[in-house]
Length: 417
Image 1 (tube, rainbow, N blue to C red):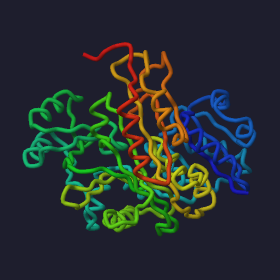
Image 2 (cartoon, rainbow, N blue to C red):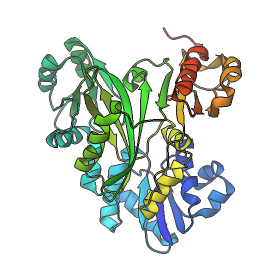
Image 3 (cartoon, rainbow, N blue to C red):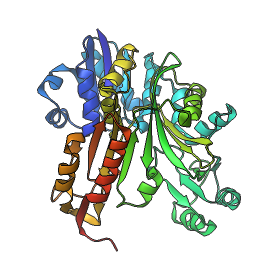
């Protein structure tokens, strides 16, 4: 039997899907470490999953390697005294999990590899040294350094070195904007202890490159497109956005990322695992890699992978961690998600257009989570709900996504401004 421990601080819906998928694997004993009590997590799982969890530890801070190590040792005793795999879905956990792997001799990504994925400045230094296209960047440790970089690189993007996706990221078009933001942050920042990452604002279309690597060799990849870009989504709280998985991704328009993507993962040290890469295609056709996470994708993208390929990628991720195996499935469908975001603040007061969309697109819908009246506005960029479509024809899905974001309106009970 394989003993695998999953670190899941919170029992979010998406995280629970990975836990339940792991619990279905034959030949695997699953242990769980969480910030939440076992009883609360159990309420979100099926009875079969609960029965298959062989060990559990509640922890105050799973991002602290010392506390996490103690919890792993505790759970390992319930699993027969050994741990074959230690895994986590959340981006911020990857480095602390790697520290514990090294300390306890558990196979998987080590600390140096995890840091290259987690530290976005180190990531881009590594990619640039390997000759892989990425956005120009600078890690500023003082106000003067930040302003000097801005003087020759506007517009630019400001982000924390250990950010994930577009979280805590914003665009700067003028020097005065950066001056104002630098004056508003904690005294003494930026500093060598609290640097700020400044990056070229790349104009163009944004995509993802999701892949599976085994023993340093890419065995699977998928490409999807964002509309609009995640940065615009983060800076415009009401805008509704989409992710599209075209059915065919082997055309010449994607040749540059099919070449650069695996090379980037090799340079960063990916050995065996699932990764999520965000990249841009400029108007002149050149590309720039933005960020890479050594983890499965969020924002329902793992579900979209599953629908496009007719293959459970939640279970595939669990099996990859447990056994180091993956069977690449064919891409039989186009798929896409439309994210529903409320107009205003407060709670959901009214939803328009759902019945019309159901009449027009009901046959295409494979999954949906619609906002409910009285629901509090979400703090996540995913918004208050989503609708996932699937069809063999890419244009059918793309048109359906456009219809959803143009027709469905989620109104909140307080107007902004």
